[in-house]
Length: 398
Ligand code: MG
Image 1 (cartoon, rainbow, N blue to C red):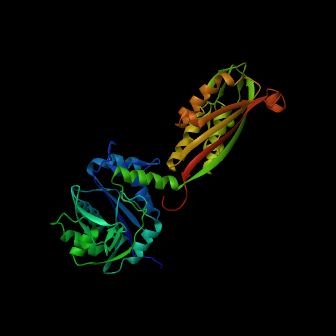
Image 2: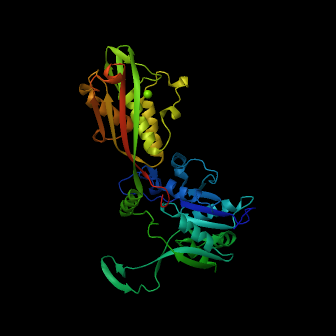
Image 3: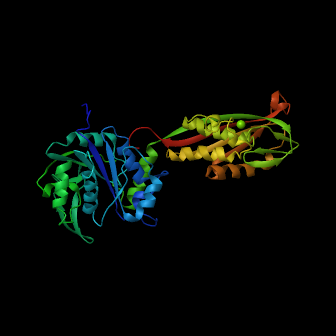
């Protein structure tokens, strides 16, 4: 459907004003990290990157503004957050009122829990399509377990499960109708989802098939499950790097972040640490993200004499920004002199500290080239590196 004048604008309202704290962890659950990326940022990304969604708004708690700014970057679809209230209904209404103030507000809205980060592209599409001019749509899951009503530890009854479903979000509605329904329900603050608000106003709501991965993260168990989902959606990648620097008159060399006294020095624009340069390129290689010369042009005087830790740290930051992590780093130094063995452990520790990983994930090896070639003649030092990483695989659910 061609939507030239945005007459069918669809907004997403993400409710994240809750105070729920995960056991033994500081801060509200929606700001907790899953594989380096917060729950809420994952949720928001699912909507900002969706082709049918025009505008995204997050309702946050007044105390969380700084946290929100830390985890969410500006995006053309993302409005500044609004503050919610004590109940979910108050928070949703605050978000809907914000849309109502827009010059060209939405005509459909999807309302979603901030702690459901695995909402898939297909589910968002299905809800958008199922909203009618006078009807909402929600995803539901049939219950396969037998349902018991209990009173403390005592079972009171077995509830017939025929027709019973679990309601998920996003729940989608014609905007004007759900705004009206929420305004009308302001005097009854015990409605736990927007379908209940819609039903109270007599608005018809269709059901579509939900997604079992679209879990709501509430208990510690949910977080364990979420970590498994994230781990399953990671792919392993490998990159290689190679670097050479010439030996010139001097009194020390920098190799793998360690200063080694020597009768000569390494020539280069930065500190000429061939080991860290090879490792940096190996990480860029694994990420498919250019090379060290692209990110730190030798033509830029800013990098003259630079500590090469800056380069490796930057590559690691780019990896983390993509929700990735390092499996291991392996570097081989090729030279006749200086002897690497006595410095190997210090190099492992230095690389591990720069890359923010356990030294057990770092290997430093050395070899000569049997006095053959430039390294054998002592004209320069070469380094060869491999990086193995985990990054989120493209596509849903991340
Ligand atoms: Mg270099």
